Image (cartoon, rainbow, N blue to C red):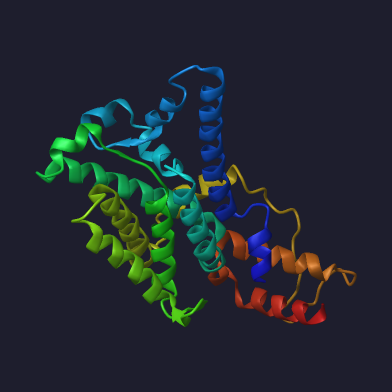
Length: 283
């Protein structure tokens, strides 16, 4: 079942990764064009998509609250964020649903942006550097997804090289603590932004998940990327008395998997779970 999610053409995790990679490639192409053509200033355009620490500057660039989380300083920065997102994002997708990926990612990035700007506005040792400080990267959004997953599945075990099986809560806790203890040393605003994303992921699962408050706008995002399935399952009881005796069992399974992919595994009814199990046994 897990392979279905990682290769699904509408997988939101892959959409986030693809968007980040595309932005990075465009920026690198502009750098190459600037070098070849001799036209200066092309690569400086990307600074208008970074999040300014100065609140006054932010008023003139409000779009940066969103755009900064898709811009990376270098390849290693991008690589580690996207590997982390892919690694834990597929687990998030499976258990919490495809439609929640973008809202959690964007929500974590926005809360991270708020803490970043707030820090440079209230902490005396950061205020002088605010006019020249900018934030970039998807770390807040990625950490939001990671913490949400670990909060929902704290005892889920993952095999790590040279370490063995480790519970997800300990892996994510280590990352969060690393950001916390790094605050006094370097990139203070960046680490606070990461913690903002972590906080959003935790709050969502602990307090908002059951109320589905973020789903109010998550559906709007996914309507643009996820087509409605035309295939319906017809049955008369939970014992699967299908109207069509020639039913394509694989398509029936895919229909239920699409529902899991969209709304999460917990959205299945007992009947659908029985259908999935029985159809799986027939293949």
